[in-house]
Length: 319
Ligand code: 9Z3
Image (cartoon, rainbow, N blue to C red; front, side, top):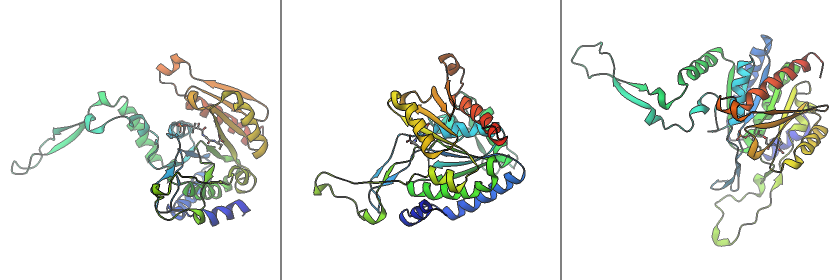
């Protein structure tokens, strides 16, 4: 295994049950691979970078995980098997539509039909008020059908360190699938971290005055992923900027540096309605109009449609 993998093992202590998740991903990839199904690894959500070993404070970022969770639904709809590598408590496929709902307002206690003798306590059941949960019947049906199909494997990370270990494990699991594997790297991963050896053990004291920290660069995973870990896979990274004027140039730079297939470029403020799909030879703008938005069209649907067809061409050796 190439040097970056060694560095991850040496410098980042995982907290999650990485080995168990690694085994689950391997079995999942084997099962779906042997049935000829395409498998996509979606990464989603932000990462948490601790400032102390007994962590009180950490550095986080804005990502809600909506892009990843919505995309997972559309990949599942397109027939893919999905490993959903997501930040703990970030948005989740299907349930993401109800993150703003207070469930206690949406549920009611009602009497249940009595089957036993009159001596037992009256039975109660809980009913959902659908006005507070728009579309719940359809969403629940989709969720249950996908769950039953075994095509969705959720894997959670919390810290940057967990993420790095799990991405490496996922790449190993998917590599045997060759071009049938897709990596859809939508997580907003920290570029900076403090190595365990340089981290204070205890809570940093404010009595010591203003805080100055120096952070190291996180190893770029895309490079070994494309070159060594899963060299035949179809790899998509996301490029996020706040300044639209440098977006495409940065996306092109990433393609040149890592030599993968696609960069989906987006700007923080407009990311829900506009992205550019950038390849070596093309730039395709995808957008959601106001009218489409009111009809519930999501940009992720368009991104996934675009990428699944590019993936087909890639498998056929055309891209
Ligand atoms: C993205 O650009 C995603 O589209 C968003 C989605 C994180 C903006 P939300 O989770 O937002 O739906 O709220 N992801 C990649 C962001 C990133 O950090 N990319 C790195 C970079 O731009 C390269 S891998 O340098």
